[in-house]
Image (cartoon, rainbow, N blue to C red; front, side, top):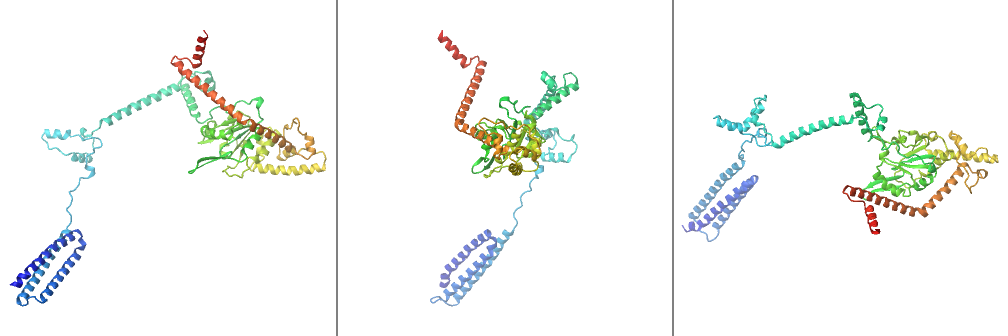
Length: 546
């Protein structure tokens, strides 16, 4: 009995420990489903270890032996087996709970059966009337299903088609706007078909005279519509350049492009927009300004190009500047039409980098490859001898001269022909003391052209042509020496007086701006009954004298 009393607390504590271990295993199994088997094996091994430890304690010295001890051991063994057998069904029930399917959610209503609330809250008038009549009201979802199944518009309930006030107002305003647009269009057509009020307009439109017939009215409408459209397609003026002045006239006109010919512009993330001036540009412009009327003809807008030209040509060596407003829009492309220049096309030369821009007069064009900003470039300077040769020989039609160099680089071909002529001239000069043909005339014969009146009048202090020929000089050599002296004189004059000219121009611009501002303020003062400042000052001075 004493042994049982001694072992009772141990057995009770062991059973409590086993009971406490079972919920932990269940909790882990509920949390981690796949690890339930590992937890179960671990608990069984733990129970076996505990039974082995109790057997050792019983076998230890001082422990009581006998049938009572064996009975107690057998009873403890049986209780352990019973607890393990109870644990297995509990673990199985936990696994069954984990493997059970979750509860199914209630079935949701399909999206197409839900009421459309984008147009406002649906009307319930039909349901309320059905309730008052004692009928069973149908839900709004059933009403939608009935409308979808029915095909006739008459069976639908008119109260179910709800429209908000905003939608009704928008529809009303749209109808009013369309009506006003139609009235305005009809009024515009009637107004555009009115009679011509100016005699100049009558002379400009002989095909659409004044009259009250429908046909005449329609002709005037078409004439005014055509003018409105061509305003954006034709140049801004019929004459892009004023009439030539006799005291400052040049025999030839040279039109120059800007982009990729005189300058090169590029943009980078580091520096933004940068513009580079072509090498030899200053010499090219100043040298040829004594022979040609220089015109800058670019497709860039005046806002973009004017800032570049202020730094490129501050002394206005280029006489005229034409921008995008002077070009023509044809077949979706911009075109430079030289017929609007108000100049004789037989004396006009245009230098460009794009043949499409001058396709209206290709016989007047010299096409050069675009300049991409490379510093060792002599494209402009190499073209000076050819242009100087045209002025010296005074050809009646420059188009025939340009035609003779078709398909070739003009600068290289002209240098080659000039070298051949120079060798022939030197050969004749050695055989004959007095050459009968000048070098320039012979070069013109090689080109296949006969020069007009040569502009080789001898200025004061210059070597005569006979003396130059005796020294073995050709006519073009004399012309270049004269042109170089004129260039040096103009360059020196600009260096000495350039700053003064710029300052005078700045003062004139400021004075013009002040006069324009005073005139504008005077006009505003006249509207409100206030006299001009100058008039007020004069009145004050007269009062003081009195």
